[in-house]
Image 1 (cartoon, rainbow, N blue to C red):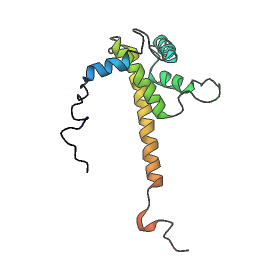
Image 2: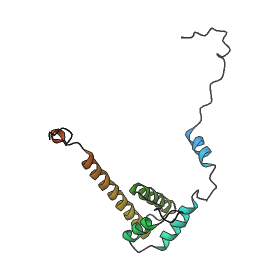
Image 3: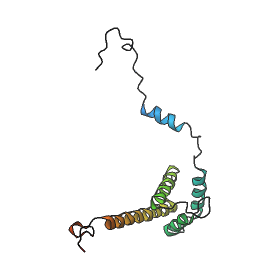
Image 4: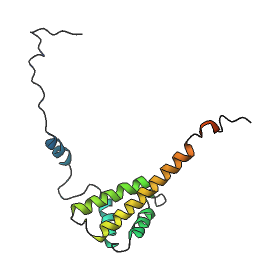
Amino acid sequence: MKIETLMSPHRFEPAPEVESLESRVLGVTSGVDDGKRPDPGLDELYQKLLAMEGQGEKAIYAYLQSLRATDGVSALYPTARDLIAVTHQLLLRLKDEGLEKSQIFKEISGANGRAFNMSSFVMSYTREVMQSMGDDAWEKSEW
């Protein structure tokens, strides 16, 4: 343990100024241009989905699953979590634009629910398969 004397040069250094949360958030978001989104691919997807309004959540979900990455082979949103993330971003954008009562909002929300249900099913199935079977586990059984 170090004991500082009264004549220590570090004793009179001013404490760092406390920065408010608002100023920190403004500092982080100031890199984004006003009115422009950082992901142009999401903007294009948003416009395509707006044109699909009225086709239903099933069609939107199928469309999102059918999108391909830049290589043209692999899926752009390969997992249910990826689908949940993109639909969540789209829902937030719709809400920011005041379209939370529109038909497209309901349809994308339904697609988000489908992706969530798929994720829950896969996690439940994986848990069931990987869960040990107690005393009847095959590792403990005798041949």
